[in-house]
Each structure stands twice: as C-alpha cells, then as structure tokens.
Image 1 (tube, rainbow, N blue to C red):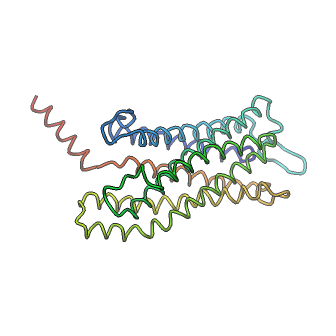
Image 2: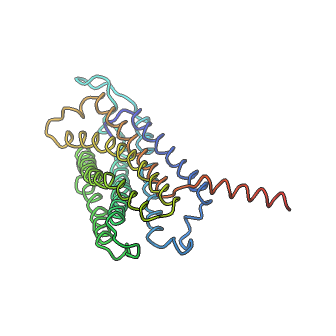
Image 3: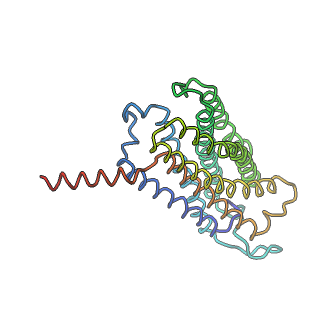
Length: 307
C-alpha cells in the first residue's frame, strides 16, 4: 500500500472497520457472543472454536493493516516529484518510524491472508467436497483424507505466506509485490477449485430431497449454495486485481503500478472483494435463523408479560 493514494488506504480502512462492526453485530444477534466460548455445547468442539478464533483474528489483522497504512498515508499526503508530478509521497520520504512500520503491517496482512483465505476457505472447500462425496451419514469428517488435506494445507499456508514477506522485506516494493502475488495466486487456485463444488451442489441437494431429508436442512443448504455463488464472484474481484498488481510489481519494468489510476482502481476493487467475501463467510459460518430469533423474542415478551 505504500504506492497507493491516501484515498485507497482510507477506503480499505473504512471497509475493514465496517466489516469489524458487522462481525460484532452479527455475533451478538446470533447468540449474544456465546459462540465465542470454548466449551459451548456438544456441537462446538475444538475445530469450530479454532475456525471462529482464526476468522476473528484475521479480521483484526486486516483492520490493523488498513488503518495503519491509512494513518501513515494521510500523514504525508502528496508531494511534487520532478519528472513525476504530484504523486502520493513515496515511502523513501517518510520518517524512519513510518518506514519501520511497513514490514510489521505487511506481516499482519500476510498472516490475515493465511488465516482467512487459506485456513478457513480451504477448510470449507474440503468439507463441502467431503459432504458431496459422502456415501454415509455416519462418516467421520475428522478421519477423512479431506480433513488431513486441510490440516497439511493450512500448515503450509501459515508458514509460506509470512516467509514470503519476511524474505523480501529488504526491498519494500518487492515485499509488497511478492506478498500480494503469493497470496492472490493461492487464493485464485482455491476459488477455481470451488467452481466444481458449486456445479455439483444442486444435484447433491436433489439427492437429499429424494432421501426425505428435513426441509429446514434443505433450505439452509440452498441458502449456502446461493451465498457461495456471490462470494465466489467477490473472490474473483479480489484475486484478479491483486494478481495484476503483483505480476506487474515483480517485473523489472512496471506498466501498471507506476500509473495512479489503474493502481488505485485495482486496489479499491480488491478491497471491496476481500471485505464482501469475508462478510459472506461470516454469514455462512454463523447462519442466523430469523424465524428462530422471532420465536425467542416472542417467548421472552410472553414471559415478561406473565410476570
């Protein structure tokens, strides 16, 4: 983000804070934050707790990254550089304190990317494939190759993403380019892998109908299928702009990153994509039941009236 315009970093900061606010609102409406407790009933084992804490940590890291760069960029604004005109103040003209903050902020971003896009998205991809290909309701997800594949893939992602940032930290622009390229390429692969799952899901739901599965379950799965279609769209809106910026950034002669309009446009589109896809992930991971919430509110009012 060192070469983005201040308005782009402000957009990222605003969107990430809105996502954080929606996270708080959604979890409060879901079950009054009870889902955050480690021992939350028999169906809330360590796996779901790890997913929950990983997701929340990723959101906090993205907020730190976006707000941190927004503060720095607006502190220095624009400068006139001979031969370039008026451009966002280059990081070379920042104070030493601000330059020293670049690497920690990108390290936050690389960990957030590993958590949200690889740990969570890979877990969901493996689980949906397991669900579609499952031949028996008694199959244990934790004993399948899909779960083991997720565990291995998550460990690799948690190591390789931060290492890319660490090994390229001596050159700020290369650090940005390699971090963005490494993350967006891996995320694009996951997004493409999701497409066959979306294609096979209607047949899966139809098979469940023929097996006389509970209607509420079918409704919930249909809703998840529709939300995943929307989320895949926003994932492409996130990964493709960042791949363009990353590929151009690692080239000896840059043709996009040295132009303000395409750089800022791709940065804003990418920010919208990551925030929207993360918000949909939250809705899928913690599905609210409007009917159930209304029934609880009505029961509470009735108890208060009877007292």
